[in-house]
Image 1: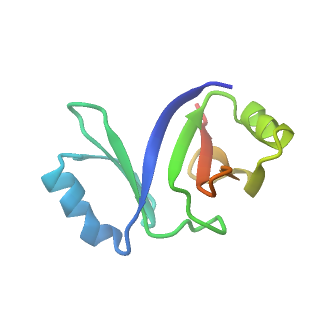
Image 2: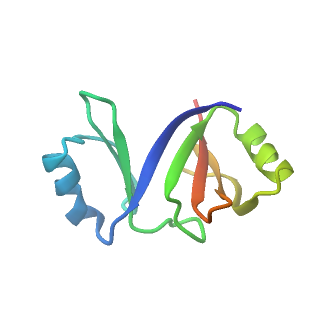
Length: 117
């Protein structure tokens, strides 16, 4: 399993209200997706991305970071073998990703995700 990208998942109480600050002020002008409760904004100049989240609509908790991987099944298996707590099961979501949430030993929850081609 190889991690190809980390993207911060920033909690905001109101996605629409927060969007202007991150797009107008910080220049994250490309909206890669918007589920109305989770959206990703990227800088076209640098490729830096940030995800804004009001709540995760299909999981019991919100992650602090998303980790894109090249083999989701291997990542899930390795997390289980190492004894890490899986707090959201391996799930294929309707918006085109397969993911699970794992709790790090420090308590942070990570969204481990693979996009379908």
